[in-house]
Length: 349
Image (cartoon, rainbow, N blue to C red; front, side):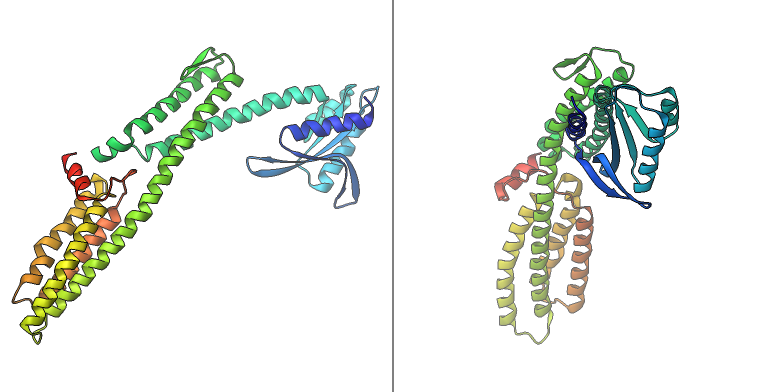
């Protein structure tokens, strides 16, 4: 292997771990221009790192001054780390100088072995971070009422059980007590554990993502149905206000009441659909809306002695009931078909 081949091999290594590597890269520093053997840019946890790599394919060990020179370049260009590569070793003074700096001394084979180990460590840390994140996301959909249990209990609990195994076995892995068991797999080292855990977490991510997508869709749809329901009740309140006017002829009042029946039918359909998007946790607040409609607004339409004050009171009560429901509204994950038979089925739950 000649120097150019060695340089290319070092560049290929850094590319293999996810970085971009440029051979013989010109780079401007504060105090001058430099030609870098291998310039590496790599993202670590979303933060971009700049590494300077010098390749010394010599037959003798590398002296101390080369570390000092590389360190000056690293500082001049504002790099995060420097790598001094040699297949013939380093003088004792070189090693001592590097130990107190951000310069890494290595051969290509050592760097490859070190990188594999470090990448496994990073993946192991990533497993812990992902495990906590996914667990919290799953717990957000733990059943809070019996209607939700029917929809998502098995899916969420099965996914949580698999992740609980990871959390339980993490303690054994930290103590290097193998074998450990994840789902149907038996693992014998950290690498196997990380790979098995990543498969479980990838599956859990898919599960919770689908649930979140459905939930968010139903949240948007449910709020749209709620807005439509409120609009219909506003229309009916407006008719009640007209009926309450003293100058309105009896025939006109009857006409308004008859038109109100059509709106009431639409409100009934909208309430059934809205109920299909409502968990039992927030359903009692929807029931308050329904009670005001039945016990106040609908009776107002039939009241021969209806006054503006009566309508204003009913309107305020409706507004309050809708506001309470809206503040506690939580959509179910999988809504039933928005029809009467679906509503009757809900009553049996």
